[in-house]
Amino acid sequence: MASTSGGEAIVSGLAAHGVDTVFGLPGAQIYGLFDAFQQAQLKVIGARHEQACGYMAYGYARSTGRPGVFSVVPGPGVLNAGAALLTALGGNEPVLCLTGQVPTAFLDKGRGHLHEMPDQLATLRSFVKWADRIEYPDAAPSLVSRAFQEMQSGRRGPVALEMPWDVFTQRADVGAAKPFDILPPPQPDSERIKAAAERIAGSRAPMIFVGSGAIEARDEILALAEMLDAPVVAFRSGRGIVSNAHELGMTMAAAYELWPQTDLIIGIGTRMELPTWRWPYRPDGQKSIRIDIDPAEMRRFTPDTAIVADAREGTRELLAAVQRRGFARQPGRRDAIRAASASTQKQIQSIQPQMSYLNILREVLPANAIVTDELSQVGFASWYGFPVYEPRTFITSGYQGTLGAGFPTALGAKVANPDRPVVAITGDGGFMFAVQELATAVQFNIGVVVLVFNNNAYGNVRRDQLEEFDGRVVASDLVNPDFVKLAESFGVGAARVGSPDAFRPALERALADGRPYLIAIDVPTGSEASPWAFIRRQKPQPA
Image 1 (cartoon, rainbow, N blue to C red):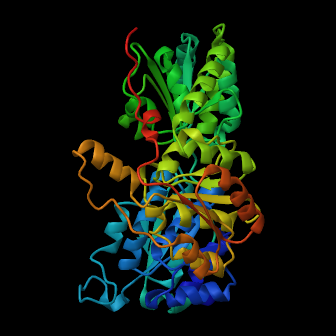
Image 2: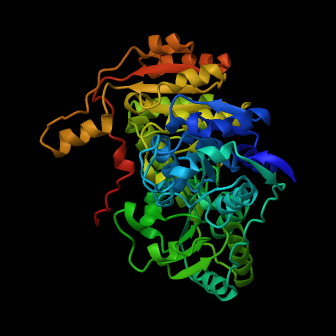
Image 3: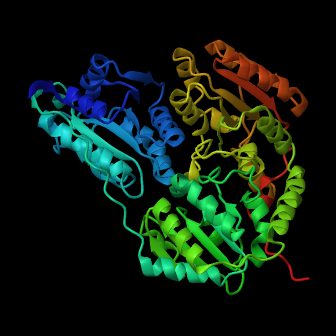
């Protein structure tokens, strides 16, 4: 054992788990931790706001599957980062928040020490998977290992560790950190697998739904889909598990065309948002199978056959069972799938100007480029109008829908993937949540291309107010800066375009530049077609 400070003990634990990059914003309570970062020569990406630290860690984790780590001060810092932790929870990604606490002598006294928050751990535990306090330096190795175990076992998600101010610099004899094994997932029940195979054998038109929990099962899912002639559909998180370049990899807009004939749904690693509540009805007699590592999902939507298991292992076992049982493909099924995709591709071109920009973006970017969306008129349309070819290349804020997430999330993804193009789709409203991180991009040469679609409004809010509240518009119109001049004042390359024709050369220049770059895209207020026709679907009317 060696004399080690609390901060050094945490950093030693991070190193034992392969962490070489941390996102953070230092402050008095965590000076000892940041000094340990420096001594260990970790790459520290400093941000201008705590929220951005969390989002960058999320982007790092989402784009790689590896834990993303960030550090902020307690109290206000943790609360500022809370939106990012919620996003990581919604996206099921391993993100570790390291924070401080009041000095040991002030714990639980409520005396109003700097940044003191009543029961910070209880607050954190309400929206992360696991949280704990490190009260002595020699407790750090095991608790850091526990944090990584919790993040990556079962349903993945964010965790948090806090340490009192004085413990970061307190010294003690501390043993070496030893990573804990990831807890084994539940094994698929053989009888339920057999029952699922029987149900599949009795179906004529199955459809597979996937989410982020299925990313590691992509080969098995594609094999199952091809055996069944089953389209594979993802809403947000599971996009790219089966490529949209494959005829069975369908967008949610195209898949809905086949929905009336779908007699069996197979959900793998997904909340099943589309078929269970976003789409307006379920066909009569439709049956369901779910494979999910989280047994709680089976209570949220109880399927006819529930298989609690890791997505890869569960799908592999199901595939083998279907092979043994046999499945009779229906003549013309692939033709119907191709026709639905072709028809939908024509229909969605009515969503203008969004689709014109998205079509160009897809044509210019390579297949492995990473795109982050945001709740904006173009972002909504991208859920079905932007083809995705690889998992972890289309990053959203999931069901949290956290405005302002797109740009800082893209920064984290670019840090993790410096050799791949990374583009952030933002609106003017959302971009201004994190505009200060242009300074971070310049300081650390993070070459993200950010697209700011400027309609001088919270566009979706404005449309809803006009349509649902008798035309009364309240607090949704915006006065914006000149985004080009603003970007240039930070040292960021910038261009302004006002049409799709001008967008292509601007995008090509931005990608070739390699440095942080902003493209301001002027869109007249209220001119965009509503993207919601292909998200909030209407029930087909009887002929």
